[in-house]
Amino acid sequence: QSALTQPASVSGSPGQSITISCTGTSSDVGNYNLVSWYQQHPGKAPKLMIYEGSKRPSGVSNRFSASKSGSTSSLTISGLQAEDEADYYCCSHAAGNTYVFGTGTKVTVL
Amino acid sequence: EVQLVESGGGWVQPGGSLRLSCVASGFIFSSYDMSWVRQAPGKGLEWVSGISNGGGRTNYADSVEGRFTISRGNSKNTLYLQMNSLRAEDTAVYYCAKHQGLPFDIWGQGTMVTVSS
Image (cartoon, rainbow over all chains, first blue to last red; front, side):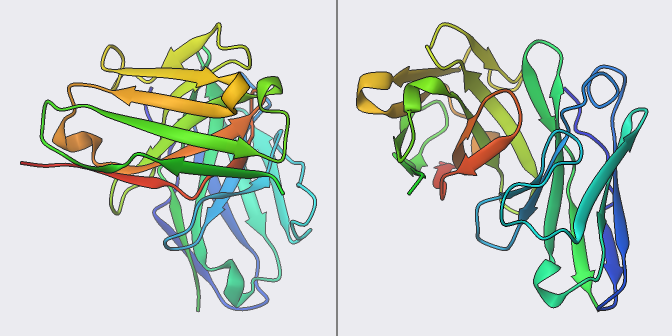
């Protein structure tokens, strides 16, 4: 149950687009189209942003999108805004009916 | 309003035990799987344990297998996590989360567990 690999940090200026990668293996990300992404502001609970690979819950901005290729999922935030500054985590179903999170990425808006 | 409220966290010595609770409201608790996810101070999220909607299937992360037990009381809309043989590395904020497979769509506010002598 090794954590999925994400870059430790990603930054961008307001209005720009950034992409966060989430790399797993054929036993998790590569085997399930069920990757979800979560946003977490300091001291707060995580919030679901993307599910089933590319779907957005009601209320989540369409500036957030995701895709998957092989064992890597990617979250893109377009039109970066100050409120997007937070930690982001991916999560995948894994073997044995378990789940595995990514290592987390700190997004900084310059 | 759909809500999850955790309780039961606190300070405990290494080797000790603690039971966490998570009370659900605003949805049909017995229809959904539930999980516990933890976050050590300054660290990332770690899935700890999950239980099926009826309670018949439970799963655990290797790091807690044999020490933690997840259970639920559907008549009380409550999820539990019994934590035994606690270690310093179990120190974390523990969140309960509602799901049906993936994703974890509703999270509680978390309860802090500190294991220290």
